[in-house]
Length: 203
Image 1 (spheres, rainbow, N blue to C red):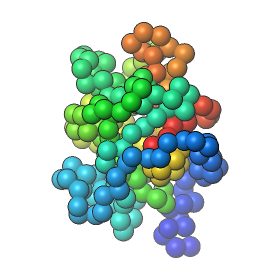
Image 2 (tube, one colour):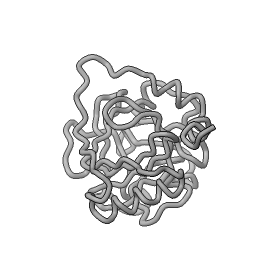
Image 3 (cartoon, rainbow, N blue to C red):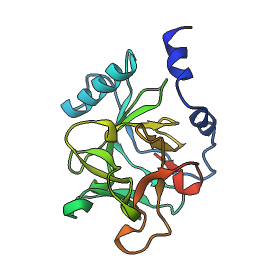
């Protein structure tokens, strides 16, 4: 079995099945810019190198100016860098149109789905806060300077269509909490054991 097949075999069946989800008619095209190896900023190239080192991939595609849109409410995901404290950098599906807080850098290995996400607004990695409790458990925040277990994700499709993603540590799918109210409306949390509209996004 060659290395590409071995890496693909390591991907959970759920990811492979969900990767076949079709983009709905009339969906907007991705605005992500695929950046060739060596042509991106230093932070992107380091992300590319790290994903390649973790997966054994010869090359890892990376995108900039990428937006993430919730299928559940049609809103773009924002990094709330205007907030402070434990909610700083919280990711929420709440923007009607993309601005600087809605742009991300993503590097993703095509064979394994290993994915790293960095907010362009503050240049921080996206983390799943697995030590939070209650309604904030698993909250995604753009707040990490380095990558550890909480910053490692798997996604089931490359930018350019619909996708779902989960955290490496818990294998819980990320959901946009569209039933929440107030400041937590649309907050992204790694907490779901299956995929529905709340766990489906477009990038």
